[in-house]
Amino acid sequence: MTERELLERFVTAKDPDAFRVLVERHGPMVLSVCRNVLREPHDVEDAFQSTFLALAKHAGTIQKRDTIGPWLHRVALRLAQKARFQSYRRRLREQVRNQPAWEDPLEPRDLSFIPMLREEVNRLPEHYRLPVVLCYLEGKSNQEAAAQLSCPVGTIKGRLSRARQTLRHRLSRRGLDGDDLGSLGTTS
Image (tube, rainbow, N blue to C red):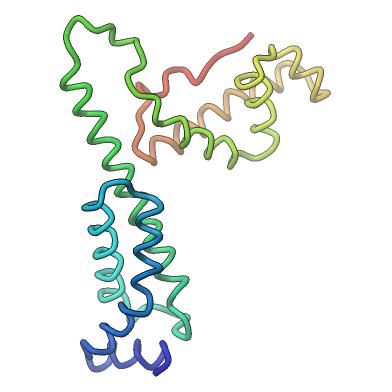
């Protein structure tokens, strides 16, 4: 049977065998996506099951029924990433809770957000990304970056400010708060 037929049978007749076949066909791909994103086996299993629960719940709303692989891939990736960030936040809260009172609160405890920061910097529009790379990653001053990009220093400062705001917003949506990020660097 085609995927369209299996999905139609599941949606209209609630046929458990049709659903089982869909799980068998797409389970290895979904499991692979979850394993690539998550470290903990129980988190992998939870994301795998949540993906197929989402299929069971939303099967009737899937528009492209000829192949549901891309839909399942998107859902698995989104759920696995959400689980990864929830796990990160949970570990971070535990670290803060278990931090000795004598420890300096300004000392960085966990730098595991850096890969997320890199991803978000790469997603910035070029006119924000270039000043961020020049000033924060290459250590150039605002004046040096302005000269290299042939624009006024005030433009560089404005773009850096907007880039920091954008990065803070995006990273907060990914489970980090401003305390985790500090000032994201400042240059003069």
